[in-house]
Amino acid sequence: MTDIASRGYANPDVLVSTDWVASKLNDPSIRIVESNEDQLLYPSGHIPGAVQVDWAADLNDPLRRDYLHKEGFEKLMSRIGATKDTTIVFYGDKNNWWATYAFWVFQLFGHSKAKVMDGGRLKWEKEGRELTREVPTYPATSYSAPERDDNKIRIFRDEVLKKLGGGTKLVDVRSPQEFSGERTHMPEYPQEGVLRGGHIPGAKNVPWARAANPEDGTFKTAEELKAIYEQEQGLSKGDDVIAYCRIGERSSHTWFVLTHLLGYPNVRNYDGSWTEWGNSVNVPVER
Amino acid sequence: MAKMPAELESLVKDFEFSDRTERIDLLIEYADKFEEVPERIATRPFPVENHVERCESDAYVWAEDLPDGTIKYHFAVENPQGLSAKAWAVIMDETLSGKPLEEVADVPCEVVFTVFGKDVSMGKGMGLMGMTDMVTALARQRLKARKSA
Image (cartoon, rainbow over all chains, first blue to last red):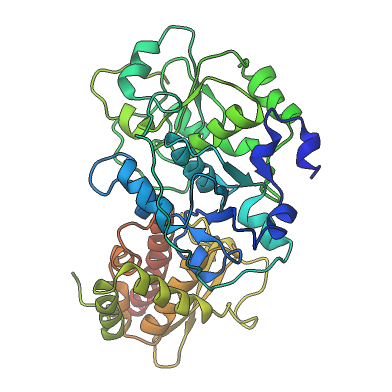
C-alpha cells in the first residue's frame, strides 16, 4: 500500500501507519487504544502500552440504548490516563470497524486529537510486530469533558424522517441482501428481531468494507474512494449525508471515510439504524 | 435444561459465577491450549461438510469414532484471530469427547451465552452456537445409525 500522505486524503493526518505507531510506543503524549469486536483479542495480545476501550462495556450506556454521557466519558478518559492534550490512536480488528466506532463516539465529546492506525490489528500482526499480554496502567487523569454533542455527527430517527424526500443523501452501508430486504441481518449473522426488511427510501447501498483493502485492512486511496462514493453513487462533497447500518457501528466506518478521508463536512451517523427503523411503526420502507 | 455431561455442567457453573475479567482469562487459557485437527483425520483443503455454518472464524468440526462407541471431537479454526472459536473448541473437546452420545446430543447451543457472557457480539454468539450444533448433530447422527442398525 502507498504512503498515507500520497493517497490524496482530505485529512491525511487522521491516519497513522504501523511504523509511526511502533516509533511512538513510549511517547507519553500518545495513548494507543484497541477496540475490537472479539473481547478475547486484546487480552490475548496487543500493542505494547495499548489500553482497551470496549464498545459494549465502555461506550454504551448499560441501561438505555445510548452512548455514555459526559461523566462516563470523563471516567473513561481518566482510566486510560488521557488528558485533553493526549493524542488517542485507535486500532482494532475487522478493518478498524470497531476502532472507527470508538473514534466516532470520542468525537461526540470533541476529543479531536484522535487518529486511526491504518490497517489496524490485521496489518500490525501481519508485519510480525510485537504483541504483549501485559496490561498497562496509567496514572488517573482529571478530564473535563463537554456535554455530549449529538447534533453535528449524530442523527436521530425523527430528523431522518423529516429529511426524506429533500436533498439529503442516505448511504446504507449494510450488505446488498440486507439493503434489498432479502435478509434483515448481516450474512452469517443472526436475525435480530427486525420486523421489516428493506432500506430507508432513497438510500444508496455502499457496503462499508468496500472502503478497505481486504488483504491488509488499510483504507483505499482517495481516488479509489471517490470512484465508489462519487462516480458510482453520485455523492459530492457539499451533500448533506446520513450513513446508517444495523446499529450504527459499520456506518461509523463510512462516516470516518467520508468525513476525514474525503473531507465531506456534513456527514452524520444514524446509530438507531435498521434495528430502529425496521421496527418503527408507520415509517416508509423501500425494497 | 436437558442433562449435560457432568464436566460441561461444572464448567458452565464456573463461568456463571465469573466476572468479566475472570471469564476472559479463563477463555484465553483454553484458547492457548488449542490444537488443530491431526493430519490423520483431515488435511487442507478441509471438506465443506465439516465446515461450521454461521461461523465467521471459519471453524471445522470432525468426529472420530472411538472403540467404546463414543466420539472424539477434532477442530480447525482458520481465522487466526478466531480466539473465541478456539477456546470453545477446546472446551467442547475436554467436556464432550468420550462422553455418552445421548448426553452430548442434548447439549443446548445457548450454553455459549453462559460461558462467553451476554455481551458476546451477535456474530460471535452465532458462530459458537453453530459449532455446538455441529457437535451435537454428529452425536445424534451416530445414535440414529445405531438405532437403525
